[in-house]
Image (cartoon, rainbow, N blue to C red; front, top):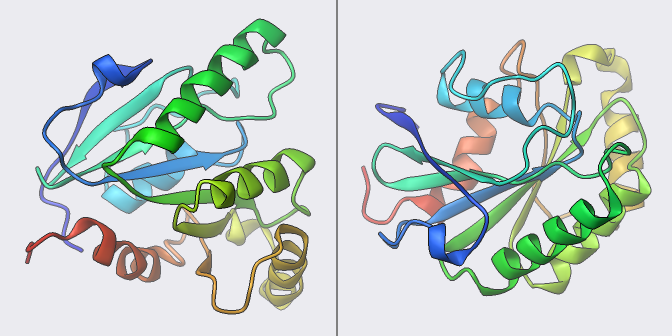
Length: 198
């Protein structure tokens, strides 16, 4: 996909702030340190559209980025960050449940996991949570450049097993450094976001 325009629109905490233009949305979910910001920047060909924080857990709202005037990337708060209070975690949980269960414009969720490690308990919970809402899921293992190519298949199989992925479930390796997986991910996303687009 050719990215002609990518712009930050709003940080929303609830339905009243969601864009009302009806454009399809791609939600991006993952642990706080999985490389979501780097993924978004690489996919959109922008170096600093999303700020990459030194401290994980900085995304506290649903951050909307409009792409080509045709669809949104929605950056979801990262999970699994210990320094967040229980009250804040509960508030995030309510916000995410409202979004994932009732947002009609949400077409697909990109679930990011770290190729270097087995899925955490939070990773498994998130995948099951998304599956519960019957949402289409693209699983993407980030930081592939940090794993020797000879170990890619083994790590991918381990992640697929722990998340309970079926052979036909979309699952890609990705590197924000080399661009590995970028074109394959776009091809997988296009049916969800291209409504009569070129």
